[in-house]
Image (cartoon, rainbow, N blue to C red; front, side):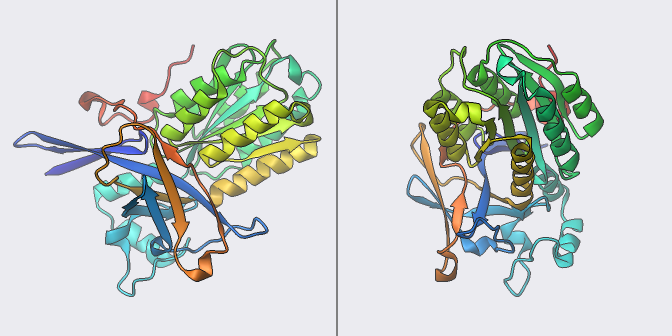
Length: 351
């Protein structure tokens, strides 16, 4: 009997084990979250696997799995119906097909469905004025997320506080939000790096949503290192910042560059209503992302690998794509002994 276990690294590592003889094969799977929008920013839904073309280091790649929004992903070769058309999101035919998937396919679907959302809240002395309003906006965002999503809540000033580990239980997350208190200096990049490292332990789509009220004034880690780790682990960064940060051009440029490189977005809110609209926009984005994955073709490059995703066909060329632009292959973080560990078992311990 062949048993397949899926993990996430620059994308995902698949380990195949055969009982007798004892053979192990390790193959890298790269997973991408892709937003497709028109010139007005409206999401384009109902696209097919054949509408996407992926190139890594100028090497064409073959799409392995495909999904839209929080619907379960499916194997492209196995799930295509006889007429060659890919069912649109929510299509009953696709749901029926998913019910008949093998155990390995069901594992894949449960891994990719939904998102692991890590909220990182600025509790530094920058936040004294708008602290309560920010807590309310974050709480509303947590309540509004799809049930398929899991959420963690962290806060930071000079140090990182893991207030609520990744969980589907919104009550635990909300308790963490309400328990936060204001701190001192802001070490945003230090704490964001640690959050991304925590997120890398989990399978599936990974997202870090940062609420910051000002620039970083005490980190030792440069933002370029943070962005590269996020790209290499497939973690999208969304940043919501207030006008205070936008008054510093360097921070504005860094926030925009970092989020764009990982496939996320940067928002600058003038008031608490803008903060709520920004969180609503992120929630909408997560619900409309396409999940694509592929097994990289042979590539001697062990350093940075560039990724390009394009739409195929003249009718789709007018649309815009947003996703991460590359990754650096990461060492396998999982031993054979931990191959069947659940996400909760690999979660970082509370300090």
